[in-house]
Amino acid sequence: MMALDTQVQKALKNINNPNFTIRKKAIQAVARARYEPAVPQLVKILHDDKQHERVRALIARALGRIGSDACFRALVVVLGQIDPAVLNPSMAKSHDHSETYQLQHTMLSVAVTVSLQMIGTPDARKILQKWHAGELHKRKPAKKQ
Image 1: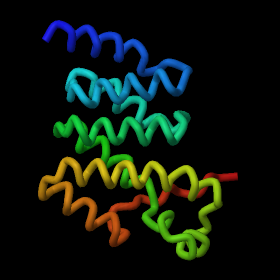
Image 2: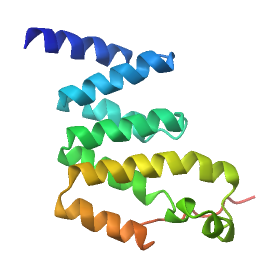
Image 3: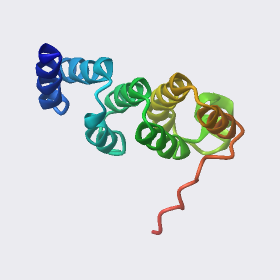
């Protein structure tokens, strides 16, 4: 158990490492350990729109693997910000989503939906059904000019 604690502590120090490979390994180590005390730090990164989508997708997968109620809630918040139309290119164009929006949110939406499937509770399944039906997405109001 001592070796696991040391590995997790080292991983926690590298969760924000600027080197993507180091950061990825750190996030995966925390997920493998299902280390719940890391959830607040992971959620903060997940909710940060300035983070690269690959990092946010890795975090989403880690939260799905940890699977606590806090993980579930964080994933639902992020999923509610993504229009399910991003997964359907013809619909995305009709919803006025730029190609950049589509690319950025496709990876994240797949990671979040897979993570909720990993959690696998009836509530997680219900949220996924609502999202796919377009009932969960909250459109952001247009910016005032």
